[in-house]
Image (tube, rainbow, N blue to C red):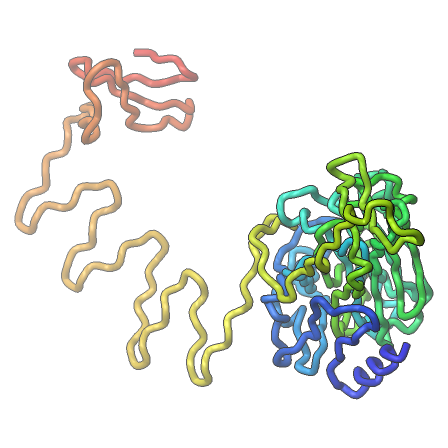
Length: 470
């Protein structure tokens, strides 16, 4: 609570958020969204999305543009949906996905946490607006398994300006399955000031129990637990692995429309009032002592056994030599790195927009167009589509395409062919075997006319629906 109060004060004064420390936890990775005002987020930490795909009946086209996603210069990220008639369905928005991935650490607790403030626009004018902070199984963008089998944890979702925040788990298969897709296993909390105050949203994945059935996934808003899901409730170790023991990445986005919120209306607002601001996001792992690290992993998914954490026993073990004390867990990397493959959806990542030209310099030409002439030089004459350039002054124009060139000046033209004479064979035409060379198309009969050059004189053939006749 103390950190929440401090962070809200800093936000109100325009000071950057500070990534808080959590007592008893180690900060593994974080981003406080530093950078110059109006620039894209750090691309070493985030994949800035640029694509449109109607995944859930969405309207928005995600753009890698500061107009839709940028940092403010004082430590905040903004994601802004906008009406745009040039977009496929009239809306653009922002979505960023972390290059950083993590797997919940065994025998301890993992926390993913962020400070978020939703847009303060008129709640009655937010039909179709869908901001979210969530985790997705990394296999979804590296070749499968895909959603929902890859696992999804929705830490914060809001739709249509409702005065409630939702958290959900998606897993197994769709439709139906263990997680009742597409609805998922969800819960909500009344939060009427989400658009005016900052709130802390987090998920806690607890892998300290001896058995996977007793592991838990907890969703929190500030200091309030809104949902806890145990492995026993899922009831399937492979499905539980996809949501509690799986490599995942983080996503911030504002969608427009979709199966849940339904389409936007004519009076749906856009801009920052419909968007989302993020102060920081961080990954924490609970510190564990050397004594607490005395665990062995008998991998449940490869054998008919379970992960067992060996805590200090009330009585000495019969054979102490069998205890293995490994080093502390191997924590993930503390910096972002780009993904080699991306399959959500299967389109390339868009590079950041090019910087503007220096002051006084003309803008670069559009892609595929020639550069402008140097200063002081006349522009080249326009060239008609498919037309050759004009001939030099005093020279006759070139012949039409397919016609022979005119004779030199002073020479008579060649005599015309006799009436009824057949044109000569095309250059390089075959003259052996049973080859027939088409020389014109008869549009009335939809047929080709041929010459058989093995006849003397050559005979005219035509192909009428596949039959040859003399």
